[in-house]
Length: 433
Ligand SMILES: Cc1ncc(COP(=O)(O)O)c(C=O)c1O
Image (cartoon, rainbow, N blue to C red):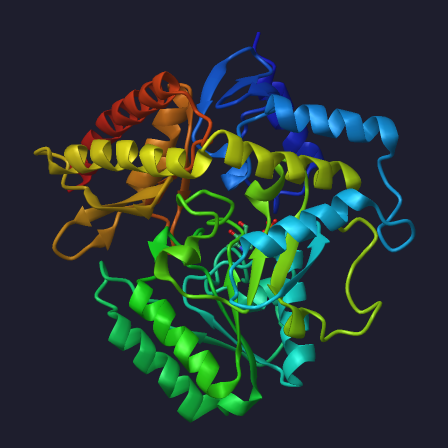
């Protein structure tokens, strides 16, 4: 008998329901495949939400972590520092192009990197306000929620949040929000709501993750850079989901040629071990006084060992080029599918590198969202042995985030399963119409 119903029941009886999500109880995982406690195999197009870019249990990452575990597992960097943390910061400083000398610090989660980037920007400017964008997701702490541009499910019922956060429109070609519209909205905030001289930071995802894989047009990022320069605002790129090679470049913002002041990194940085980092201009990162930044577990030795190995693997296995190739394969498949008659529900295919998504609509001309169909496709995929994630402010986007180490045959098999899931779910959409 399947163990999963019992585990799902125990989960419901023991775990806070606020921690939502699937009931695929993992037993083991290897590269792009995962097996549940019933021995069922899944192809993993979620990669732990863009974390396992180097696959589950990459041998080089595992070996580095095992070796570190033999030496020591925790000292707290504030108490007894270690060379591997320093080396990782040296490497990250070299990878992030701000146009200036960099400094870095390690933390544990993505939202902690975001929080620290805001702290640093406030310390460096002596200002308090922060500009974020509609549809943004920056995490689940109070500041993370305040910056996030989507109420349900992230913010509803949890306020009040830190004040002086302003949301400007994010461009969305599909829904008719042009770059000009978005910049006009930002300008209105700076004329109606807050003096630009009070703004410490502007935080932007070069590709919105949870918001629906909305790619920031390069001209938009360039205009934001110019605005930050004009008013002395610190430009923070939140690369937590889009960074670490996912889009075919180490950072997604590199596609635009824009150099940020600070970057928040996490997820793919350490192949499944909890690590995040803030990297940025030395004159900004060094603004907070000694003792103002850090934490007990920030830059845990096991996670740092994993991150150093992940950086090696990205280079040795050519994963940036691989991300581009994977993205092309997925996009070609989805574009062909969307062009097929009867598949009008696929209203848009978009992304950057191996960060590809498709948006589901009830009507291509009105772009009305089809969240039920989206949920159904995810369920049908799971029933066939494929893990998929949805996203989007209208809950009508399916995002594909396979490990960058996925073999071609497994990628093709996963795409076949996804296509079969779409074919199974579409009649529901047609019946509803
Ligand atoms: C762009 C972005 N920023 C921040 C976060 C928060 O990261 P974490 O869940 O590790 O705190 C996420 C998580 O999905 C994210 O996608």
